Length: 184
Ligand SMILES: Cc1cc2nc3c(=O)[nH]c(=O)nc-3n(C[C@H](O)[C@H](O)[C@H](O)COP(=O)(O)O)c2cc1C
Image (cartoon, rainbow, N blue to C red; front, side, top):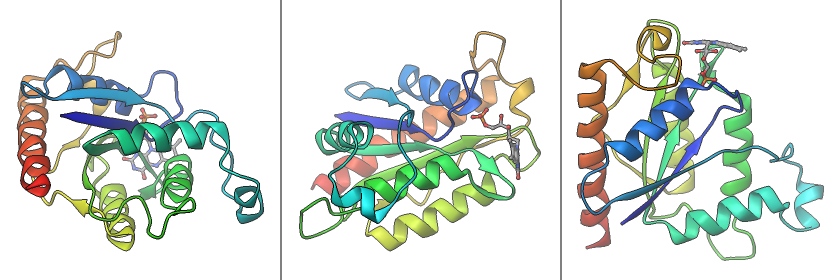
């Protein structure tokens, strides 16, 4: 079972990227997680889209189609989805010549890390709402909100907080079941 984990932050030392790397390390047996970034994705513009998907978008689409499930690492900016992630999401939500958006019926999960005491809860809620608009089948629970990320990761980006590691492992196990259930 393949999961594509999309990091919504462009920051080199991103906590959300480190969190996704942790999901790969703690994934259940039989699940392979590939962590990808959204570097190089231009600002969405329908005129640009008419000229064909930019390479960075086409690459994410290809990998997304080949995956059994999509996982978003969702940063929070100003009480909402970080702009770069929403922009990449808007690109990926487009039908790209097919009759329906590529998210229809796809198993999706999300999690996020932030430096505040809210742990991206507001941004995740907004992303869930946007996912609903695309027809994605977003796993309702468990949810993972990593609060005060600066205290939970070491300088190398390793998630050192054991209760948080346990929560990530639970989410990944549940996502494996969610994907299997939806595949029927
Ligand atoms: C423009 C901006 C707005 C932010 N707003 C929030 C916020 O509303 N809530 C929050 O928890 N953190 C907020 N932060 C702090 C982020 O949680 C922090 O920068 C975090 O490291 C971003 O995720 P990353 O490490 O994956 O890049 C904000 C950061 C920036 C740059």
